[in-house]
Length: 397
Image (cartoon, rainbow, N blue to C red; front, side, top):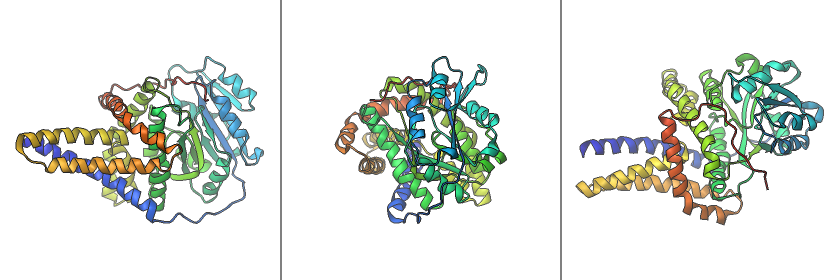
């Protein structure tokens, strides 16, 4: 019983650090003012790179959203990397005016390799910035205009708002929409107000030409976004966040559809966390560099669903301690952590559309959490998907 109590204490300290960190960001978002907006005339030349592996279903929607940009046509060029495709991806891209690069390489497979191929195949000198967008996404009509602002200010790495385009497809997409909204509307803006770095989310990433010429693209794991983000922080640089440049991706509508994708994402994140998380944290401590310390936390802290799962596991174990020894201090501790996480989630619902349906989706959250716990456990044990496997999609309604 003493060993269990010690484990529960350390477990609770870790989760308390995670919840406190999120609570600080939550508080900062509502207390600190947004920076004053500025305006620069559109002049940034964008290369829009779309890595695509058998994306004939949703690619055209993306290309249409790019054509509808309220930004001078002559200042942006769309490049689609048809990566190991066996469908009509290349044809659809060409039909919609994109520059098509067909890549066939059975050995070096993955989004990271597709990005590198595009960067090495174009003349970067013809552009001022590179904007990476997933093929199954679409961007808001002012995205390039809002990315023009930070690039003109000399910011080199930017993560866009990364939302869900099909948020009302199912209870699953509703829950994910709330989670994404909390990140996009509360946590990332708060980090900007505090002068901290955001992290890359794989979709809607923008980099200045000078940045890419200096650092290149050298991230090829299934967690290429986390890998490249870590290297940015290690180099003493930061990632800015643009709330107004928005990318909306097509989310999986069911657990079955999402399993392979989540296994890939989760395994990629845990692999980078094991490799760089503590190294980056202690490097920040040695240097007294708050950016590096904070930059390590998204790797070391759990994702929201895992944070809630770890809290519930701790709560169940603390109830065992209560029954065996009558000590209820752990029960109250874990209940407090559970409530604080739930409050943040409910606050996120207030930022979404169709709030009642999002709130009702909480009743099926236990199913989601159980499924996600299995995903995370398998990924932590090294059984996650190691290859870039296309997620099955359905046409957007």
